[in-house]
Image (tube, rainbow over all chains, first blue to last red; front, top):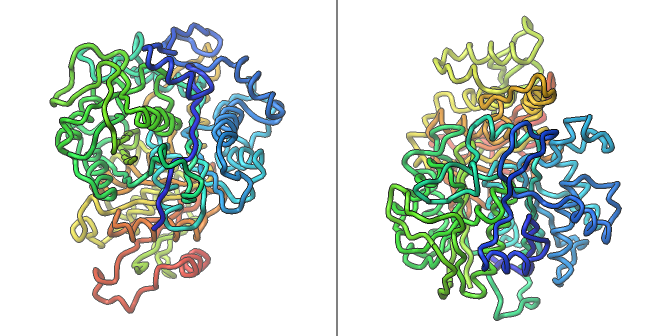
Length: 383
Length: 210
């Protein structure tokens, strides 16, 4: 089995187009979540983290023809491009595979009045993925993972399994979703959206913020290309199902507990080794309780936990990747970022929430995600 | 590893290996066909009726696959994994949800519809029904990809992320539907192991194209 290293990263959200912009704003507790009053797209106002479309277009036109790519495709291409340009990974190589994580991709194409300038078949995720990899001149069929909100973590785990087996040298793992009337209306119908900036793990949390964004992690087994000081490895991961309810989190946390304990077993570490947890932390009442129960049961009561949702919302298919990217940057600097929105402890089991920017040596970090369909996933990164 | 059972649903027929286990020429539309197939199992499970077309298809395929298999008794629930593929995601219910939000004058998005606008919900329904707590992965591929399925399941089994796997394909778009599921188990867990095919890409394709 080969070691799988993180050799490049990017995130694009309302906070910016580079990692530096993200880290700078996160260190200063700046949120990109804002009140959205766009009555044409969304009948009711809501709080969300949206990317400035004009800025996205401006960035994209420096690398490609914006008429050929939908907003979703532009976002993922731009993120992968920014991660790749500072790396030695050859995106066009037949030893490089693209893995794409998304929940709804180009779902806005279903509304033909809004989007009639693209072929209707681009609503198929495999088709959108082909369009994305062609940009990079890659000829390997891309892998698309669409597993609700755990898609990003499942994509990283899949890439790790694939690369460690030696099938490819490099994986470009991209995840993302855009904010659409389709998704916003659905979450509004569920009444799961917060009436302000979300408050993960807080006693007064009232729901989530949707966010749009993309993230990219470049993984490689080619150790020669790695700066030893900065080398972060993916060392294990797992997923699970709650077997409880398709839209409500498990009341017991059993599913997430299984994913976390299996991931630690895969990584050959114990709960005591975990220095930090980047939780899913959507800030819905049930989700955060479920996570606290699962972490507590897994013996992870001392490992500090944060949620990044207060900075850029829940980016759905992007979340597992964007939040891993930010947490890996923190790990490199031995920093744990504040859980923006959190003030007063409010979950059912005692866990440690990161409530200010904190320095801590981090050798092993755990990233988790949970989603509709009762699915959970966990991945462990190591220095 | 062995393929201990397979189920194929397409063109108003359900087959297990080469045997037809359900067939009807009475109903021509998918929703009626899948309801008739479900009823033929005599399984009281009212949740079936509220599922979207994709979940109904995958659910019925899993019921035929797991019928009399007792796998929840033979394996730890967290070691039973699901690895699925699909091309059209949840396109049928996506279009239904889109209709509820298209016109401002007629705006009524429903959580009961919206929840099914994620294709992995079909795996959630199967896990709920059978109390499976293991791995879940859903790949979106243009066509059924036997090699991808074989490669991924093999790595997951080798890494002991799961001990047994329900793997395959479930796809529906209006009247075009097909599901093909396999039950994959280690030789050590099967008493009459010589009766079954080895789990490899060639055998998967053979079963798929019977």
